[in-house]
Structure formats: structure tokens, C-alpha cells
Image (tube, rainbow, N blue to C red; front, side, top):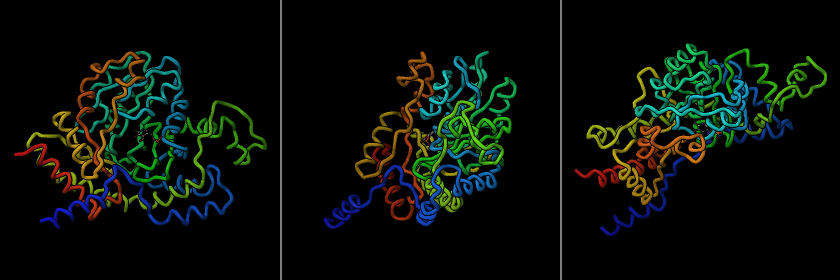
Amino acid sequence: MLIAFILVHIRRIIINIPFNLPYLTGAEESYLLEALRSREHCGNREFAQKCIALLQERYGFGSVFLTPSCTAAMEMGAILADLQPGDEVIMPSYTFSSTANAIVLRGARPVFCDVAPDTMNIDVSRIEALITPRTKMIAPIDYAGIPCDMDAIQQIAGKHGLTVMQDAAQSLHSIYRGKPCGSQAPLAAFSFHESKNFSCGEGGALVVNDPALVERALILQEKGTDRALVLKGAKSKYSWVDLGSSYLLSDLLAAVLLAQLQQAEEITVQRSRITEAYYRLFTSYEQKGCLSLPHPSDDVTLNHHAYFVIFDRTESQQLFLSLCRQKSIYPYTGYLPLHSSVMGRKFGYQPEDLSLTEALASRIVRLPFYTDLQGEQLEYCLEGMQGVLGRIYPC
Ligand SMILES: Cc1ncc(COP(=O)(O)O)c(C=O)c1O
């Protein structure tokens, strides 16, 4: 009895289930060394070109610009979309600050929309009611890697003459109705932050599917200069021709990214086991009405970026978090809605303006999710959560 008790505690001390842990494929070191030794470390060099070619070929993207982050990619996208002061952009409140910042930095105004509980993505049925003569863009996100309803969004955008920038930070390798996420909207932004399925520490990509925007994107990425023309041999000297910034990913990071992108399929298969395991664990609690789970539609294929659970009450959410922590398992509460944040209030929003988003955010939990969460670690995590659920919902 005593030995069993000691063993349980030793296991608890040894095993620690963080919320996230970057994965290593094994090829990163040699690629990184190769990039280092090439003495060509700036943006758009050999490894960047390989990443770009792979992304275009595998996912059918238009032009791809590797950037220092998804945040930077969206800032670039907002300039390309020609957002002006006073313009309005419809976006979910349930997202990361970067989606809104890209808009606000142009002097435009975020108009927050509620989300649908089965995916936590923008509730498409509420978009049209938010359109005004000032609306210029819709900026949906693919929460937890679940594709938003891009056909419906594009259809609304087309009907009202709006553009779309998809915050696809979490959804590389997810597929919506046979089309890879990021291949449909005129602009889409991805993240390669260490918390993502395929990462290089910090990194991102802007996909420009509208060919009319490509020339300006080349200039924006290169500090507002026409350096790309010099590199192509079309000009002998480059000069300052437009707005811009340093929206480039170093080739050292592109080398790490290439290793990860090349193994996207293997990574996704490994991650799918975590989704299945969580689904098996939580589904009976959903059937009993204790909580609800993500329900992506049948016509999407997931990249298994994340898994979330929406508890019946905030008290259950809080208890789940604290009891898991006692077992060295670290789920996370997810985003705080943007509309009721300090910045959101400056735009005139009150929490009750999007009461559904507010309620869901106060009950949601994102579960630990990383590619290496397999075998004994996954078992420990599931057993631990099973015990916690038994305490919250005894029956
Ligand atoms: C939906 C969403 N958008 C944007 C970002 C920002 O990505 P990055 O850290 O690459 O700038 C994140 C990061 O987690 C995100 O989840």
C-alpha cells in the first residue's frame, strides 16, 4: 500500500505534462549547420526558397512570403489590403491580439463578431448584420486548426465587395472541403511559433493568392524598396518606393522550418492520436451534459493543432485546471475575448456586447497538446484527467 502510494508520487514528480513542447524531427541540426556554413543568413535565401516551393507545391498556395511571425504577416497583409483610417474589419472577438493589432495599426477599427460553440470560429450567420458602408475586410481565424467556413465567408465578401484575410496561424495542413487552409482567401497568414505544429521558434508566412497584390508584397517585405527587381536583374540599384518593413525570416530559421515542413504528414499522424485519446476520454462526459467538445463539420480534415473542452460552468473549468496542476498536468484557459479587453473597451465594447463569446471563454479549457505527447506521457495525462473528471462530476 505504502509502496504503491510512493510510486504514484514518484511518477507525479518525474512526469510533467506541459501545455506545449516544440517537436524536433531530427533533421533540424544538420540543416541549421548547413545554413550557417553557407554564409548566407538573411531572408529569401536557399532554405527559404525550399520552404516556399514546398508550401506552394503541397498546398497550392499562390505567392508565399516567409516572415518573422504570423503577427508580421498580418501586418503586411493589412497594408496590402489597403486598410485606411476609419475602415472597419469584421473579426471574431475570440482570437489572439495580433489579428486585431494588424487592423488597428492601420488606423482601422475591429468590429467583433460572436463565435460558434462547436468550433469557436466566427459565427458566419452573424457577419452580414455587422456590415456597414465602412466595412472593408473580414478576418476570420481557424481556431485550434479547425477550418472556418471559408466558402460562406468568401461568398459574403464577394456579395459586399470586401476582401478576406484569413488568420490561419493554427491551421497549416488542415483541409476545408478538399482545399488546404490558406489557399482560398486573397490573403492568409500562418504561424511557425514554437507552439504550432510546425515551428522554427518564431516565424510566419503570408500567402498572397491574389496575383494583383504580389508586386507590392515584394516591396513591403523588403523595407519598402524595389530590391526584388535588382535580385531579378531588372534594375541595377534599388530605392525606397513604398511603405515597408523588414518582413523577412532569416535563412537559419528557414532551415529549421524546412525540417519540420518535410515531416508534416508524420507529425500530423502522431498528433491525431492525441485528438482521438482526448475524444475517447471526454465523450461520455459530453453525453451526460457535463461539457461540450469541438464538432468540426464532416467536410474538413484536421491538422490536430489543439483540443478544447467547454465545461458546463466556470467553477468546473477552474476546478479542472487546479486539480490537473496538482498532478503536474498543465491545461490552459485559452484566449480572453478581445472585445472586453482593455483595448476592446477603448473601441467602445462592453463584455455583454458579445455575451456568447464571453460565456464560452469563461468555461473553455485548452488541453496539453504537443507532438511528443505519446506513450507513457499520454497515458499519465489521460489517467490524471480521468481522476479529475471523476472528482468534478461524481456519479
Ligand atoms: C490565431 C492566432 N493569430 C496570430 C498569432 C500570432 O502568431 P505569431 O506568434 O507567429 O506572431 C497566434 C499565436 O498563437 C494565433 O493563435
